[in-house]
Image (tube, rainbow, N blue to C red):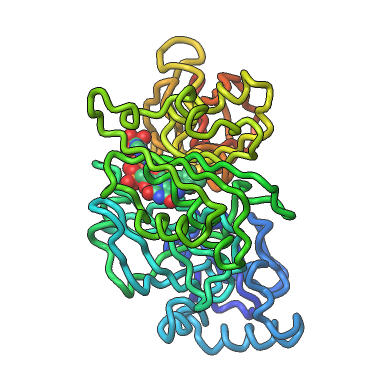
Length: 425
Ligand SMILES: Cc1cc2nc3c(=O)[nH]c(=O)nc-3n(C[C@H](O)[C@H](O)[C@H](O)COP(=O)(O)OP(=O)(O)OC[C@H]3O[C@@H](n4cnc5c(N)ncnc54)[C@H](O)[C@@H]3O)c2cc1C
Ligand code: FES
């Protein structure tokens, strides 16, 4: 298609899906077509320029930009101007945001920080937000989500994410052990509502465990950079002192800012020691007696967050608790057969099919069947996985609700087949 001889001055723009589905495979999805025969499947594309709307500001003015872009396209046929730009610097791409790993810093035995220089198009972030990261592992593109651990005030324009290995995981072991400086990653825009309010509240409590310290580290670094540490208590749990990610820096911050009180709990069980073992909400009341009067940001394992939500709800102050989850909430339905409990899934675009039970997300079913599935958070918050339903019905794994109309956009990461299903991938 790219070699068409029809006269044209515009590059099209038949994108199957927005980032982060965008991959090198897009090269064959971006189709050159004659003038005025533009076919659009994505609202994120600016028809006047053929450039992602997000990146459109790189064109000096619509008319000049369009002419320049058309000229460049004509000159570079059968390749796209982007193909040449990317040879000069892989971060210069209008196909999607990228970032180059500048350094890999060990944090603990099983956690590393990646220092990433984002390409043009990075619009910054708020402390506590996360970023979708696309990475090729053994030739397959995966998307995962990581909290930004750098303060927005970071002076050199780099961002950092800190990854703790999940044993057997598809991506985190690669990021922790195999990735090298110089690797170019795909990035999505920073997002998420787990952020501090402006103006800042006067009393805060951070309740974190394991890798759950990451978004809070971004907040603490930001507060420290601005020199405005409020009355804050950080209760952090990790198996041992050596497992505390950012341990030395956290202890240093608590010394530097008397208004920040750090309570480390080392959970590796030591019989008889009340400061070890899993934190209970009763113990939290002793560690931080005024916790109910504080605005709380909590991030950590599912069990700790479930306990905290129940505790704050029971106290009638659920609105004061802000939670960031790294895993989906426990599914509302269990897998099984019968009506509404799974079926045959057909991926119309790729021609693949698979059997699915009623408890497995369609995202997982598609990946196992070899379908290129767009994804991001994998837990129903970022909407990167939305895909049109062609036929059949699905069940929302969070609520158990069954739904499905032809053409409805479904989140494949939290939807399971409720009978035979066809989706447009
Ligand atoms: C908003 C958000 C922010 C996040 N921020 C961070 C961060 O700053 N640092 C970080 O290390 N991770 C973070 N995560 C988790 C991260 O996105 C990945 O899920 C994690 O790195 C595991 O990916 P994987 O490919 O190695 O494992 P997968 O191949 O996706 O999963 C392998 C198995 O491990 C389980 N699993 C997945 N994630 C976890 C986990 N975190 N703990 C225990 N079991 C798990 C899965 O259910 C599965 O059974 C965040 C997730 C979200 C949604
Ligand atoms: S992958 Fe984020 S909502 Fe589905």
